[in-house]
Structures are given as structure tokens and as C-alpha cells.
Image (cartoon, rainbow, N blue to C red; front, side, top):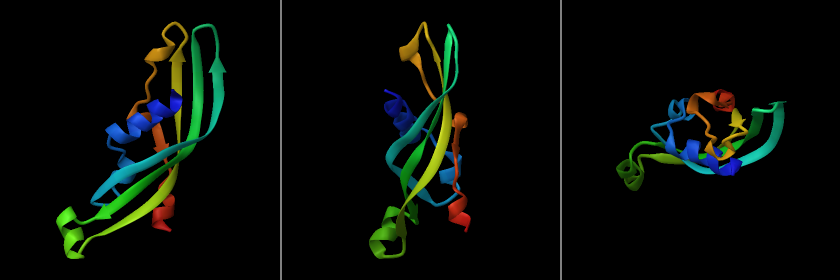
Length: 109
């Protein structure tokens, strides 16, 4: 369930850290590495989720690619996000795009 929510936000929202790297990007996979409980009480469970997201970065349009003027790269980037779950409605959980922190620093190395 948590993987599905994480995967959904990466596939349905624009993630700024990826958007600035290339003309287009597409999410290939989302992998969760670790889930840690930050806080828990009688009404809330606060989780820290760490993992990797694999993307395909594309430079140029699809037409550029067909003509040999564009290029695609596959790369994986670490991310972390928090997920707060209300214990009275645990199936209504969601992750907001602004809660996701992607480390794209290796692009600039």
C-alpha cells in the first residue's frame, strides 16, 4: 500500500528536482529501501520513507530522438518523504509532492 502511494505521486505529479534536469522525464520505477516510524500515538502514525526512483531523462523531443538529435538516459536518485497516517482513517493516506525530497546532486558532479 505504501509503495503504491509513493509510486502514484511520482507518476502523477511533476517533481521539481527531476523537471529541471532535462526536457522531459519519465518514471521507470520506485523502490522503497526503508520505512522508519518517526512518531506514533493514539491518533497519528508518522513515517519516514527512504528509497530510490529510477527515471528516464530525455533531451529533445521525440522527433529529435527519431532524427538522432535527441538523447535518453536512465538514472536512479535517492528520495525521502514523510507519510502521516490518521489511525481513524488509515486508508485515506497520501503523499504531497512538496513533501518529497529528491537528492539530484549527482547530476551536478
